[in-house]
Amino acid sequence: MGHMSSASWAPVRVVTAATFCAVSLLAVPGPAAADGPHGIDDLRAGAHAGQPARIPDRLDGRGVQFLPRPDVPEPPDVSALSWMVTDMASGKVLAAKDAHRPLPPASTLKALFAVTVLPKFSQGEVHTVSLRDLDGIEPGSSLAGLKEDLPYRVADLWHGVFLRSGGDAVHTLAAMNGGWNKTIDDMQDTARRLGARDTTVESADGFDTPGQFSSAYDLTLFGRAGLTDPDFADFAATKQAELPEEGGPDAFGMVNTNRLLVGSHGVKPYDGLIGVKNGYTTHAGNTLIAAARREGRTLLVTVMNPQSGSRNAVYEETRALLDWGFEAAPRAAAVGVLPALVRGDGSGVTQPALHRPRHRVPLHRAAAAAPVDAAAPARNWWLLSAAGGAGVIALAGLGTGLWWRRRRARTRADGETG
Image (cartoon, rainbow, N blue to C red; front, top):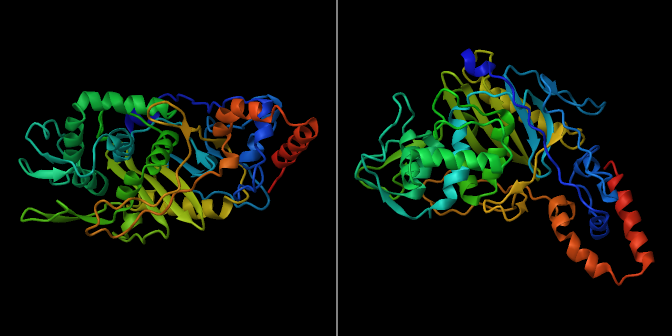
């Protein structure tokens, strides 16, 4: 691994906003969505009394972080240098290993690139690729196969990014965004906004570059943020496409290189997989952000640099962690909770949206991304905090009896173990 894998760690603490007693009067939570013992409501217990939520965060610790329980199996023993298993709706981290360890991310960094740049252009916009767009592509980079002076829709370019990790597609979109350096700066700003403090961006396409690092924690943040965008979710789940999608004499077919999604090279497709992004470079080894949905629950698993030597280790270790996560999630205790998602304009916070991806590019689409979990509004702590002031005014005229009834109801709800 060299110096890149042994860089000093930069621990990141999840910071949770304090709330006020008045907010608890507004929120009588509905049933927990299978969060189980020590679920997301329990982690926030006590905040109704005006104290900051006491959320245990063991993600700064080294080695495997997992809170044993008699009815929850232990995570599988995998060889990856770093990994994390997260329940997407609640933000609960079910288990992790060296979640904040800085490591080269390879093409999983393209998830951050997509979160940053994808919303800026309409998918139907047409761009003619120029020689200048393709300038600076590093030798050995993966390529989508874009051709100079050929017009492509923006959706075509994103197919090149997600299916083939195309450095030519990344460079073209970065040129449209104002240039390579501006795009790197934009990505760094996006990482900071999302709470990703382990990430230093030096190359927008994830190509091995001195000083470039991310972590399993940060890559999980990027994957989660991306899946709230229907277009991102759609591209991440696409198994095959034609480039350009509308055909023509220069068109050719592409198959997604994510073996766990499509089933190839001896890897069986994972039931319920909905993306997100795989990667490989010499220094990074194999990396993968993977999301899967089963029986209404979406899990996000990030795996960085397996050491077993197996050519499919990153996929099989991800499979094992997903299988464990779906079995453990209803009862597992959290070792940490991801921060709230912040909107791009900084105006507020949002949770993953319940949606079905919009199919703007229907041809040769082999798979549609599944809906992403939505946190129940009654359990959306941050939105309740924002609504607290208005709620207090609305309740000012109510009698003290109703006040105490709702306070007791909230206290009972916070104490439930599901």
